Image 1: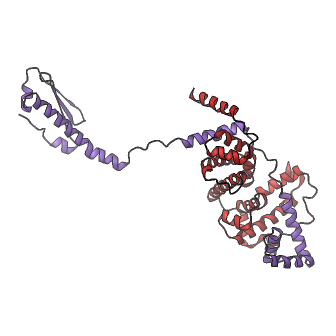
Image 2: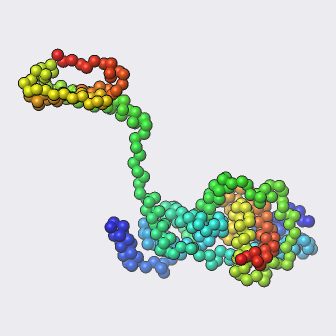
Image 3: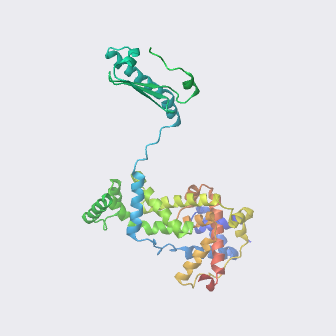
Length: 174
Length: 212
């Protein structure tokens, strides 16, 4: 039995990958070794049998159908990815800081309006028209509307529904 | 409505431009400029070869269709990087080869090692195979030979089949196969030798009634 190294060299010779000097030695060996000759013949025959195997293989789908699938996928891939939702840290910042800041801003604006109308905050409840108020359950918000002065106050506590918000007494302007 | 108008526009462009007699290089240049009609012509020209290569490697028609579709999408996306060092046909074939290799590696991770791979690890089964003589394929009709090769390829592990396909069909050199598959040249030589010997043995052993 030919050794493994010789077998691989024989194959490399067949594939034209053996260096020139070694190729010459392989030609000599092939001339006198029948086992090598038989193996070389088998490798050559297998290689020839495989030649042209892929020729004649056709795509099973029609040109138009296949192209429509490719074009659709190209279109889909070209569209920009959907805008990602805010990251968790951004959501946290929004909830922790921006919401209370907005509440404070609304409160400040309402106070400013009431001062411009010439009334002190405490006088709002004494206006001629009957005032109305409403608190929205579970939201932590309280609104006060004085129809006489066309003034609305929105009282927001933050965080809503928390123990801290419930424990703090509302600010009195009396 | 919008889709219809787009289709209409595409058809109008097809009528305007007839690329059927254009060279691949001209089609590539037009495609690189965003002309999808030119690219469609490239797809039409090379899709059989791309599909055939995928089929040789993965041995499943549906998977070969999907992979070849993916290859064409990748081809379009990577066209700006194609500088023409090789022919377009070679370039797109290398894309499908890499996709098939990725696909086969993923598949392999999901299943038990094949007996073929165990044979290779256990030490040179190919060396013990008797030499097939005389040539068993000499008098076979082309169609019958194709069927035998089909069956034999199915019985090789993907590593052996891939080396065989890359060498025999893609005509890659050993070092190029080693680079593509991420293994040594020695491994390539050993796998190729085993694959050829196994193919010879299988082609000789198939009986006519096995082929129906």
